[in-house]
Amino acid sequence: MHRRRLRPALVALATIASLLAPTLVTTPPAAAAPTGGKKVIANLFEWNWPSVASECTSTLGPKGYGYVQVSPPQEHVRGNQWWVAYQPVSYRIESRKGTREQFRSMVNTCQAAGVKVIVDAVINHMSGQDNGGTGWAGSSYQHYVYPGIYQAQDFHYCGRNGNHDIVNYNDRYEVQNCELVNLADLKTESDYVRSRLAAYLNDLLSLGVDGFRLDASKHMPAADIAAILGRLNRSAYVVQEVIYGAGEPIRPEEYTGNGDVHEFRYGKDLARVFRSERLAYLRNFGEGWGHLPTGRASVFTDNHDTQRDDGGVLTYRDRGTYALANAFMLAWPYGSPTVMSSYTYSSRDAGPPSDGNNKTLNAVCYSGWECEHRWPVIANMVGFRNATEGTGVSNWYDNGYQHIAFSRTGKGYITINNESYAITGRSYYTGLPAGRYCDVIHGTFTNNTCSGPIITVDANGWFSATVPARDALALHTSARLP
Image 1 (cartoon, helix red, strand yellow):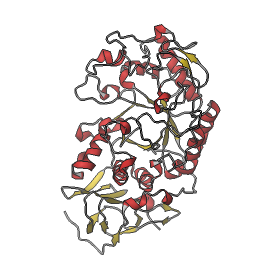
Image 2 (cartoon, one colour):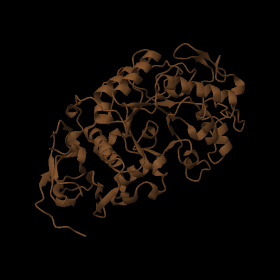
Image 3 (tube, one colour):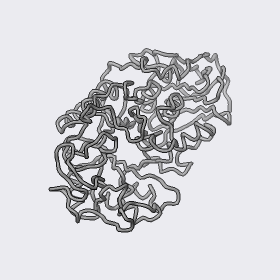
Image 4 (cartoon, one colour):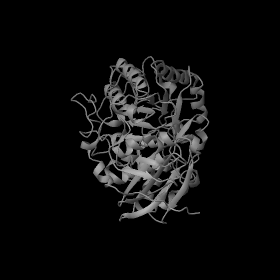
């Protein structure tokens, strides 16, 4: 049923592309409140510990991020590629990203800023170096021997292929007992191995971390993961990396009893819609598309693996389209969202900016580091997500093609125009209280002021606006002017 539109205010918007320039990014001076129900994760991929600590204080806390996900902190093989961090040689907290004390200080600093810390934990395997060597912190190792930690009997040898690698992903045994690209596969059904892995996770908990992203979870039976988690000294947030494969016997749903699970279909489906389909199709995005239950789904537009894959997802290189897709993700109430923050790379193996000894340099945004989590559209939509948490979708609108709009009932409203032309002077019913709202796509709301356009919602909940091509606007009750 249509209501009568009373004196709608007409707003013309700047284009979203103009808001992606690094020079327009400002860091709010305000201190962060405790996280509470804030659920958005910033994945500061390969940032060193002092840089993470600084970012928690200057940006993540003030912008309302609830968590920061940090890269694997354990001692790893030497090299400058990104994947060396995923080849442990010991469980010492010393890596190219910093020392144990720097890690502890980072955790304390982030928590003081209201940001919880999730560690990317590598527990499925050790290194993939056939000839062994010396790790980052000086520990010697061989492919299947890690002195004082593991010996040959602590690993799987599937024996099905000449080099023990996984070949057939339709064979459950092979996927969970053979080697992932030559990485020495731990015997996670072993009581001893479980105790060593739990000891590593408990050490991280003793340093104050709040949760774990369990790398390569698909390559461990869910029951093995449950047994390891059962040995933790206290509760922790858990999200598991289980990559969906059509027709494969190992399914993400098997792991939901242990915690959240990455929903890899989400980013690929979202990219396809924004690139070549219709935004109108997003009306039931999530479970309606066969994705995991919302309460167990961890979602992202891209992560460090998928952005290096075959182009199936949107990345920082997609600029405005990437910003719009992230805005949708943060506005849409499905799953727990993670915002990727990456560095610029030109080859798949390229590591982060580093010195001559491969030590990761401090992150300097827009100088080798992309810092997507700071892009104004994305950073401001974190506040939208926080303000609308727990509310459903109402007042859905679409034009059948590339223009959509919806409310987060009583708390927020967003409209996205992915058409090649502006949507001119259309009226939108928000269901929001009357008032003046900051358009957080184009402006930052601080100290009861807005740096961008102000949208007036009338007494009946309506406003009018012109939305440029491939742009959006968003408003929420926590960015309402006095």
